[in-house]
Image (cartoon, rainbow, N blue to C red; front, side, top):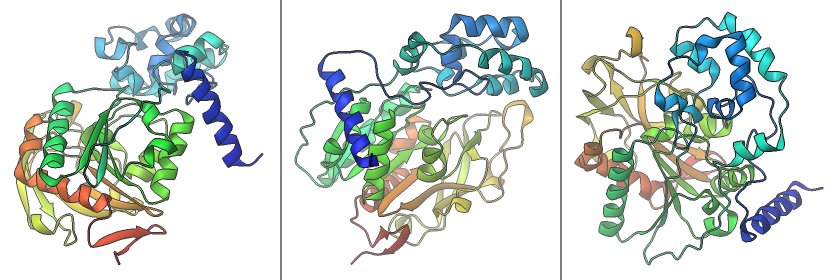
Amino acid sequence: MQLRHLLFLVLLAESLVARAGAHSVIHCPLRDERYSIDSPLIDVLLKPEAKAAIGRTEPALLESMPSMFANTTPPSFSAIITLRTLASFKHIPETTLDPVDEALKSLPVTDSDRQARCARYDIENPRIDMPKGHPRLLLFQKINGFRDGPSVEAAQRAFEALAQRNGWGLVVTDKGGTISPHLLKKIDVIVWNNVSGDVLTITQRGALKSYLEHGGGFVAVHGSGGDPVYFWDWYADVLIGARFLGHPMTPQFQDAGIVVEDSGPIGRALQPGWTMKDEWYSFIASARISGTHVIATLDESTYSPTGLGGRDLRMGDHPIAWQKCISDGRSFYSAIGHRPESYSDPHYVTLLQNAVRWAANLSDTTCKDGREVPRQ
């Protein structure tokens, strides 16, 4: 059976389930995977037998957990960490986790487990009436992981103000069902507003990937690239282009110098850079390695990149905002934006405005076959 035909049948099945008013999702990621120390912690906590197995093998793992880790109702931090991550937070040696892993892998995955795993996804296919304006933006803010309300709300206000000022059409949604081929045909740019946690079903993932590869635009801010663990490699490694390592805690928010190295349509008006206060992300490796076009970097000499427990978060080459071609699509990510005040900083607002224009294919350059080229 051809992949396109199979995708159509799955979409049809999910549509029929949604119309029937069912509350379960039939095609969510990790639905049938065995339990392990690399499962989302939220799934482990939802299964009593899994918690009991941990209690027998390494009880210290689940003892004295912060409430944000123990919560099993999304949005929850437990959706973006695993038992392996939790062990590192608690300084429990990984060598002690083998018995836990074996015990978890021996547990059956039941229909109830599948339903619990899929409950945080949605297949609602809402009707979208786009307001007048161009380009047309979908401000997407479904969050299953960590939700920092003030930053999400400040970013929403900033994009709404940009849309009004520039004559863009904008719709706000927290429904994963909007990421469908039918609805994405109406959209020029998807804005991922501090989205944390895995939020798309398998078919919704396919729709987003196809949208980008066929010329769509994507803009993501801060928390959209800040999860400790990802369960969709394409999102982290291709679409965003870097994996989160940590952020300073001594103190958490610091003034830092931003160096704008881009002379293209996004960064040109912001050179040579500016200084602002925010929560500064470090990444496991520079986004430059994954083939991004770096817009701005952090000057690590202007702040203290020290994380929890004195962890050294210096990267040397420290990109903080970048753009990338995904086949014919355009992707932009900025790690700036934890503090609500960041979204009223005139430099940052200009950066976001220029990023949306580029992602909407309204700037000097565009993307073709994975390369940035002059727009004709």
